[in-house]
Image (cartoon, rainbow, N blue to C red; front, side):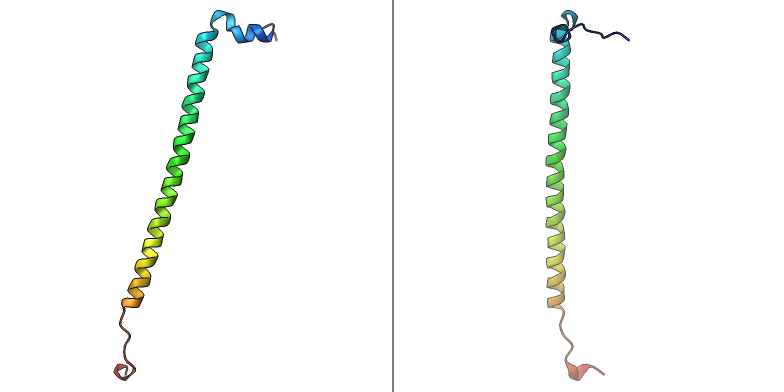
Length: 77
């Protein structure tokens, strides 16, 4: 098996197509980085929303327990 390029400078020049090749590599890596960043931000927002929803449900449950009138002992048969 032969190496495609004889040296590192030849690899970086890419046979005269370096601008197009490295531009494509840069666009791909930037797109992947943007996608990763968006995913992490969306995950953080989703988890924050879930925590808020759970806290609200817990507050409502606690409020419902406090709002339930106690049956006086004389009314219990």
